Structure formats: structure tokens, C-alpha cells
Length: 497
Image (cartoon, rainbow, N blue to C red; front, top):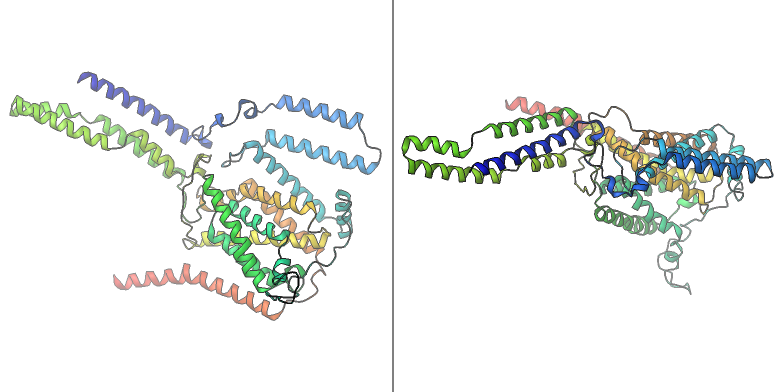
């Protein structure tokens, strides 16, 4: 029995040391190394190699600047700007801080994304202070095929018949003619939105809202004119649905994190109180006398045989109870699952915890949900506005580059935005969300400044009154649910009391 007591004591001491080290790692700023796993990267790619990269940049700069200089002034300007961009992006990958929550596929990737976002913001500010002709000339300097007026885009609502028996090629010629590259872009776009937002309700609201925006601007943009079956069958229930299903399948397959906008994450004080309570409980359990001591004490008063039997019986019974109770290690791991990854500083690899999206939880949650939805719709709409004012055709590669930038930059941006509105301890908007919002403001100002006269046709009365009715219903429902309904509940409770 003495050996058993010694082994139990050593196991308890080891468990307490492990739990204490785990508690200390949770209390350290940034979460320590509780969730980081440097072994998932190779040793070479996990180390910074700052000196090696500096030498490589110096050799490349000497080669291209000294031994391979361009002949014309315009080419020299282009090469110099390109070299400055490369150096800034390399500096971003080496020295910008890591994102607090995103670790996969590699921290270098998210530093690079942040550096590109900063450059894109500087570019938008530069374009904003130019005239419209100068801005178009700058884009023509990037791509010589630009700088020309865009021809009239295709009108998809010229013939809305779904069945065309007189057509010799196909009886569904109108339906077949609408299937083009935009079908793939719709599906890929909503696949990316799922990776950004990871909530079905918000994605479906955006899908419905963009169809409403097409109805709103179709009197000025021929590309927005579509037949009813193109809006709701091919886009809403076809391409968008396919992208949403593939996106959520990807999220579940790779065990990515589902976001929660309703459940407030625990604060640092709450986490510290929980940890202290668990430590005190563990100390009390260790301070309790063992079952053997109780058995002997009772046995002396009532007889040896009876005392031994009772002592053993109580000891075995208590041992069973202790075996049923979770030890400190499992309890700390359970606490680790409950703590929001935002408090710890890293996303757990393989975390696929689900949360409820209760947008009616509080006015703050509801407004944050609405603002993010409007931001996504605005980014979608600005892609069409920028193409029109800067004369960038739809098939130009710059449109794809912009969408990829918003797609990858939106992942850390949405994560920072989510953290700011759900974490009570977060008092500052994250850098990626800040840069993303700044880019949205800059793009909106560009569209406003250069877009004067691009929409000559006024909005139809149906469009005006539809949006006025929608905004009225929104605010009436908002004030009723969060204020009038709460006031009536309190009043009824007072009457009952």
C-alpha cells in the first residue's frame, strides 16, 4: 500500500506540474507555445534567414540595376518601381508581425498578404489624387492594352424566352448563350465568400442582396440586365448554390473554424478566475485524507475485522469515485477547448468547433452583422464601377488580381473584424481589418470622384420606393426587437410581481 501511495503522489505531482505549466502558458501574452507547432514546417522554412535574403536581394539588385539597365526613361521608372515593390514585400515577409490567429499554411504567407494590402492602399491613394485622364494613362502604362473606351457590354435580357423551338441550333439557345465565364466566376466567388464568412445565413443574404443590386443598377449597366430565370435559377439557385456547397464542404473537410457572432468570448479576467478556481479545487483534493486512514480510524473503535473491511470497502469505493472524476490534465484540456482561440493567440490545428449565429443576441451583434454584409456587397459592386470609370475590360488580368487580393486579404480582415466585435477585451481594430476598410473607402472615393456622369439615367420609382421600404422595415424591426420588446417584457414582469 505504501508503494501505491508513493506512485499516486508522484503522478499527482507530475500532473500538477503539467497543469501549472499549461496555466502559465495560457497567462503569457500571445499564448506562449500552447498551440504553436513548429514541427509542422521544415527547419529551413521555419527560420527567418534574414542575412541570406539580404545577400540575395543585393546580388539581384546589382545585376538588374548595374548590368542590365533599360534604355528608355519609362522602362527605367517601371523597373525601379517594381524593384521597390519586391524589396518592400520581402521586408514584409521577414519583419512584419505575425497574425494573431492565422498560422496555416505558413505565417510568411499572411505577412506577404498584409504587405500587398498596404501597397494596394498606397496605390489607391495615389490614383485618388490624379485626374481621370491621368489615372487611365497610369493604367495604360501598366498594361498597354488599356486606356481605350470599353465597348458596350452584353445585354442578357434581350430575349427572355427559355424555350426557343424555332432556333435550329438548340431549343434552349437563350439558356445556353448565358453560360459563359461569369458562371465560373459566380461559383468561385461564393466559394471564397464561404471561406471568409463561414456562415450560411450571411452568404445567402449576400447572394440575394447582389441580385437586388443588379435590379437596382440595370437601367445604367447593360451587364446587369438579366432575365428572371437568369437571376434566380442560373445565378441564385445554380452557380451561387454550387459555390456555397463546395465552400462549406471544403471548410468541413479541412476542419476550419466556424465563426460565432453571437456568443461573446470569455474575457481575460473570466479565464483567470476559472484557472484559479480549478487550481484551488485540485489543491483541496490533494489535501484530503486517503480512504485508508478513514478505514483505520473507524476500525479501531468497532473491531479489527470490521474496521479493515470497512476501510478497504471505503477505500475501493473512493478509488472508483476518483477514477470516474476527470484528472487535472483532462480538465485543463477541456478548459482549453472552451477558451476562445482569440484569447490564446493561435488557432488550434484541427479545430472545427461550431457556434450559433444568433444575430438577435444584442444590438451590437446585429449592427456588426449588417455592416459586414454591406461591406461585402460594396466590394462586389465596386468591381463593376472601377471597370467602367478606369476603362478596364472584364477579361483583363487586373480584375482577377484585385479579386484575389480581396479574397486572401479578406480572410485575416474578417477575422480581425470578428474579434473586435465579439471579444470584450479587444479595444482596437486589427491591422488587416483596418487596411481592408481603408481600401474600401479609397475605392469608394475613386468611384465617386471619377464616376460623375457614368450613370445618366435616374433611378426608377420602383427601385427608390423598394429601397426606402426595405430600410424602413429594417429600422422598425431593429428598434422593436431590441428596445420596444425589451421594455414590454420588463413591464409585464413588474405587473406579475
